[in-house]
Length: 304
Image (cartoon, rainbow, N blue to C red; front, top):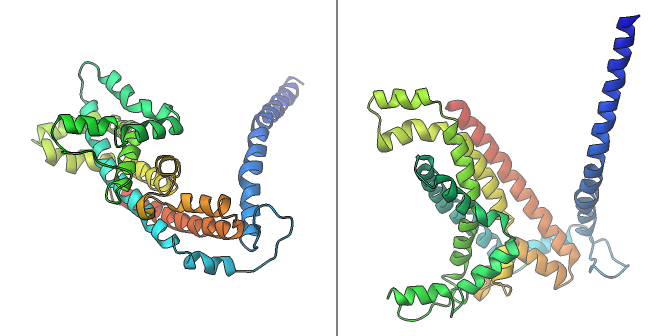
C-alpha cells in the first residue's frame, strides 16, 4: 500500500507544480497575445485595405498597398539609410567593443568600476539619453565648445543640420549606448576560454596578434555571433534615436529610417494600409536576413 500512496502523492505534487507553472505563465501569454499576436493579425488585415486609422469604413484594395510601397519616394532612401546605420554601427561598434573587452579582461585596479561605467547607458532611459546627446551636439553644445577650445575646429559644426554629419552623429550615440552589451557578451566568451589553452599557446610561443587571431578570436566566435545577430536586428529596427534627435528626418531626409518612415505614414499621413504594408515588407526582409545569418553562423561554428 505504501508504494501506491507514494505514487499518488508524487502525481498530486506533479499536478500542483504544473498548475503553479500555468498560473505563472498564463498572464504573460495573455499579454503576449494581446500586444503581439493580435496586432500582427490586425496588421495583416490593414495592409489589404485603405483604412485611414480613424474611419469605421474602409475598402479592401488587395495588393495595391504593396505596389505603393515601392512607389513611395522616401521608401528606398529610408531603406538604404537603415542599412547604412546598421552596417556602420555594427562594424565600427564591434571593433570598439572587442578592444575594450580585451582591455578590461586584464587584471588591474578599478576593472569592475570601468565595466560598470560602460554599462550605465543601458540602464538609462533611451529618451533621456537621446535628448541629452541632442543637447550635447547642438550648435552651441559642449562638443563644439570642447573642439573649439582644443582648436580642432574654427567655427561650430551643425551636427544635425549637415547631411554629412547627421546620420554619423546618431551612429556615434548608438555605438556609445551599446558598448555595455558588447563588452559583457565578449567578456563572457573570453571567460569561457580554458586556461589550459592559453597556457599551451604561451608555451608554444604564440603572442600578440598571432595568439588573438589563431586562438582567442575563433573561441569567442559564438559570443560575437550572438552580438552580431542581436545588433543587426536591433539596428535595423532603430527608432528612438533618429526620431528624438532629428524629428524632421534630418537634412534631405538623411536620418529617416524605415521605422520612422512607417511612423510618419501611419500617424502623420493616416495611411494605415500603406504603413502596415511597409512594416510587413520590412519584417520579411529582417526575417530573411536573420535566417541567412543564423545559417552562416552555424556553419562557421561547425568549421571551428
